[in-house]
Image (cartoon, rainbow, N blue to C red; front, side):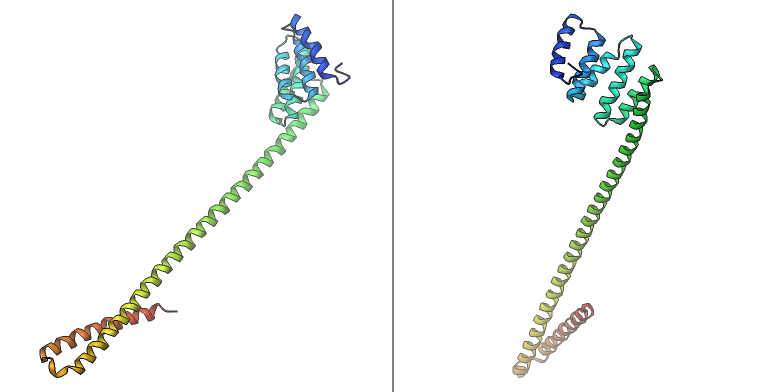
Length: 212
């Protein structure tokens, strides 16, 4: 049945036999073969490991070889290489085990190189994303500083305009009502106006130095 690919029927037959011989390593081995044929490599590997506990060296070697095949199918190349190596210790003349052992080692090397490459690409992507985030943060901070400076400059312009308006209005009032204002009051007002003009000129100079 197994050789004909009738794995389910073979499993039924082996399961009945296992009822009578529950500790038979041969039956574990045969059920493992059937599960392997069905593509259930996880179950097959567990059964081959159980079969490998036998005192029969030849059976153990075969179980180890098949265990390597189940790991190989699952792309677990490190485990596969270890299983083939163990099988070769029991049967050093097994050419298939030798070939598969070397193949598993080559696949393992390639797999590790691919993992390293993937990790490198992942790291590069992470570095790029972090740099982009830093650039965005820097741009945001520059924009905030510019907006703050623009606001400050706008406030200065408004203050200068208000000061100029006060100076103009006060000077006009002095001119219009000069005779009605005492000399002392006029002197004090003109002194304050001069101070206000100086501060206004200072702010105007600062604005010019910041202009582009």
